[in-house]
Length: 111
Length: 111
Image 1 (cartoon, rainbow over the protein chains, first blue to last red):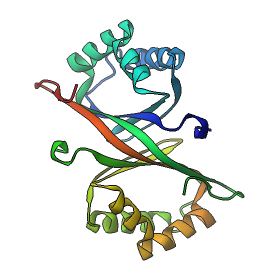
Image 2 (cartoon, each protein chain N blue to C red):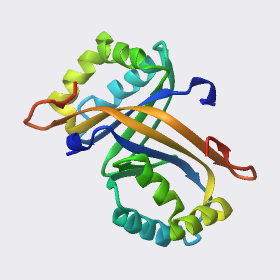
Image 3 (spheres, rainbow over the protein chains, first blue to last red):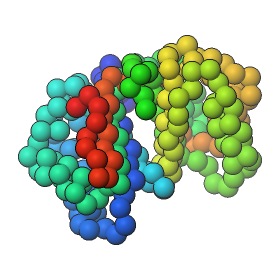
């Protein structure tokens, strides 16, 4: 899907949460909805066990900077530090190559 | 931790599995062990719900290419296509910026 966008960017957000929800789920759903409305948003992957990993994909670095500064997201970032996260790490990455496999198909991409 | 390595590389592996284990867990543990022994390996993050996400971090692209060609890993890749994955996607990314937060501390990094 992303072949036309290359190079594009990935924001890797890894975290461990504090105990309890404390309003996290509601805010998380809102942030996902708002991120998807931002210019330059491509897609998002998320999974959580001991560590939570959310990766969002963006057309360029400007789109990432705009999302970081978005006003509701700024509030969420402050609350995240205040009450939701024991730690988190953010990595801004340029996606240089990509390939994929689908059942019954072949490998596709830049391999 | 990674400040000294920058820029370094991330391999984002997202996947959905077929039903059942079919020897996956044993191979997955072995691959994690072998990856950690490879030259240029830095660290790894993993989480799985509907989608599984494994991100491995490497010093450079040569280290990633070497790991892709490693003989046991080649066998695992073939078995992965044959029996473990409905689909997977591999993205090779350059980590350009990074910052982190730890409870009771401040934001650190390239923000």
